[in-house]
Amino acid sequence: MTKQRIIDSDGRILRALIFLGMLAVIIVGLAGSTQVPAGQAQETRLRRSGQTPTPRPTATPARPAAVITPTRPTPTPATQGPVATPTPVTQTPVRQPTATPTPAPQVIQGSQGVDKIAPNLGEPPPIPRLKPTPTPTPPEEYGENERVVVYTELVTLNVRVIDRNNRPIDNVRENEVHVYEDGLEQPVVFFSREEVPITYGLAVDTSGSLRTQLQSVIDAGKSIVNTNKPGDETFLVRFISSDKIITEQDFTSNQELLIDALDSLYTEGGQTAVIDAVYLAAERLAEYKKGDDNDRRRRALIVVTDGEDRVSFYKQEQLFARLREQDVQIYVIGFVNELDKESGFIRKSSREKSVNLINKMASETGGRAFFPQSLSELPQIANEIVRDLRTQYILAYNPTNKARDGSFRTIKVAVADAAGRDKRIALTRSGRNAPRGPAPTTRTTPTPPRTRLPPVKP
Figure 1 (tube, rainbow, N blue to C red):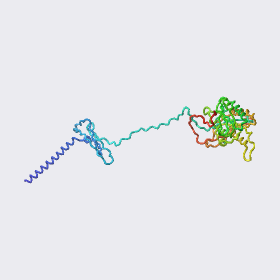
Figure 2 (spheres, one colour):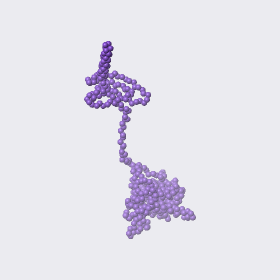
Figure 3 (cartoon, one colour):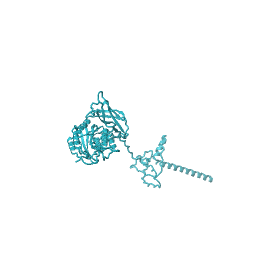
């Protein structure tokens, strides 16, 4: 009986302990439910309403962040019970021995007293920069005084037409003219008989060999200058050796200045440089512009010399290569009678060489050569030069050979014979040098023409 009592007593104690344990669990559970986080409360409500709660991301543990205390507490709804205001705690971050890990999201208490998890944004994005829109290239503008030069292939010719007696013919029509380059006929795109102003130079040999003819040369020069018309321009050069090529009077239409410059000419000793004088004077003429680029002035150089070249820097080949690039006609009055008339067994005489040089300068450029036998012929020669310069045709053609290879192209102009009239002969330059390289287009600001002759003497 005693043993049965002991067993009953132990059973009661065990049941009491089980009851007390269950009661403690209930009390602990009720106490914990009073501080359910906002996320768990929301999850509980969703479960009660039958909705599937969205899984909450689990923050990766790292160094803890400081808790931010709101400025004022906000009461929690009755369903959730009172929320204790947390005491601000500042925690010192733990120093990691390795690279700094990504910071954990901050826990922030919201305005309703509900804790929120600040998302982990990582490093801030770079500052956005507006990509500039490509600026379109503006249309090319040209200055007020700027000149745009577009090179074309047109070839311009000054043509004299004469009969068998060397008399000029001034009634030629365009359909009667034919131009040939390297034997092939070319299309003529411009033809004119109009009289245009003349720009010409007088280059006078004042070496000792012309001492006795100088006054007659001056008088012939005055005869030519006195025929100048309004718009004509002339410049005067005297030459001896290469270092004595002197501009006595630059381009002018003032006849008095030209007459005074002619009267000031005098002879002096030196080795004659005919080629150099013609090279530089022709270049000066070709570069001189009066007005705009549409200036169709006829350009000519009248040379008075004995033709004996002794000390020129330029060679004949260089002279004629340069003349083919210029539209300058050369007229020569050659006083060759006093030169050596005897020729050696090997070399030509000085007279023969001078005649050949003078004839070639005239024929290559479409000019004429005169060899007076007496000084009395000079006035008549001056008149013929003026007449030739005034009675000419200007034509231009578009070459069919477009190759820019720098080669020499022969030029020939033919005029159809008129019924019942004498044969008509066209005289012009013998050829041209084709340009070399691609056709350029340049923009330039007008500048004074380049002067290669010495300045006007004081």
